[in-house]
Length: 356
Image (cartoon, rainbow, N blue to C red; front, side, top):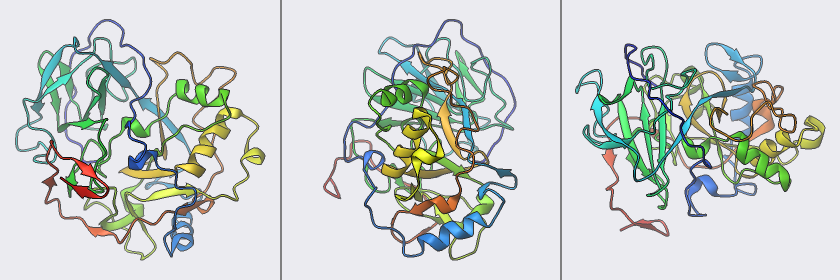
């Protein structure tokens, strides 16, 4: 996404509580839907062949990445008692993503001892000029997910960011999410935390030889995405997208690992097999622009760790998987990017394909 900023902020003492990753509770929420038998785009094979031809691995941006995993995100947990601070438009009111994001002044919970994406050790100061600096907090008491993008600092001076917003995890959102042409903390307009995976949920799925139960977030370079287009359930794309080929992949695309992909032959590790079963059943959504394809949560606040002997997942665990191992799920015709955001009202009710 677009980046602006300087480094500043406040590190809060203490320890952020660990808990399961936030999930949309409704089984028909798009992120939770089994697409293993879903219809494909008519040009699915051509789309994946085109993407695969853009670099040796097929993934990445101007750089070539293999099917790598990024572990830089933190997902923090709040309660009704967690301190709350107002969102502050940063670096100025004119830079803030409005009306796409919640109005400055909206309260945002901030658990002591947490961290912004990419800070190590976890802290509440981030160089938003060069990094995305996402801040992800779920209020477990209200089932509201709070996410911010380009978070310069968070603390007594407020949540200083280019965008701060809320997702109600008890609701099913319409196909255009929080509103047509509206961004979120991710360029596609998606929630972030529910599309991540962590060591605890992976370990739990390993015990029953299962899957993660939801789709996964992935990213590509804007130079490799269809120019100025997106497909639902994305509600937004960017004018930085540049690929004019008819088989280019638009923002919001859902890729599904082919049924023919031999999971057991690829890896003997149960942890890797969980991820691959998930990609076959639920797929992965193209959510943002960048280089490293897959996104997982850091294990800083989880019980199980990525390096545990029975998990053994590192950034290279899925190396060798190519775009041609995937299919593209049908999502309708690509839509033109305009940036003319029309927000879905906060009090919406979405039932059987209709808004009320």
